Length: 122
Image 1 (cartoon, rainbow, N blue to C red):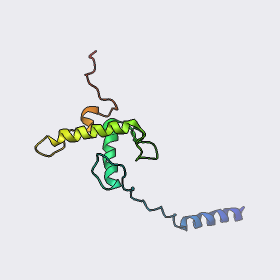
Image 2 (image 1 turned 180 degrees about the vertical axis):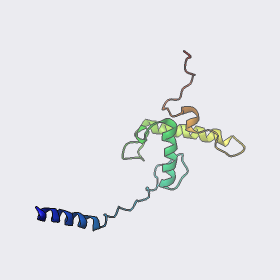
Image 3 (image 1 turned 120 degrees about the vertical axis):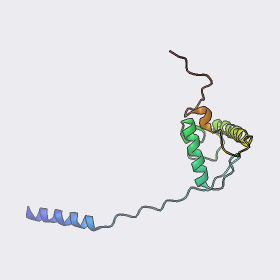
Image 4 (image 1 turned 30 degrees about the vertical axis):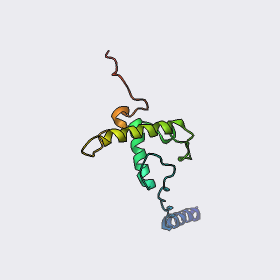
């Protein structure tokens, strides 16, 4: 019994001394391809922009993209998104101060389909 207890303590001590396995280095996202509207050059820039889109519309990536194949144009929602991005860019370009005044969130408010009328009062 003492031998089992001693071996248990010894094995716990050895396990604590072992260095944790090194975590794999985080790779930067690949450079984007098949961009038709966005004017960016790095995967990090695209990732930041896409996070604002998912927040603005309250959706996940697969709402507009084919899962695992982001450059694909098979999902018709992607073309619709491009048209909406172009619309927002055009509106923002008309402001003389050069600031972004309109985003996806302006109309969508976190919902895939923007409301076009107020909720009925009860």
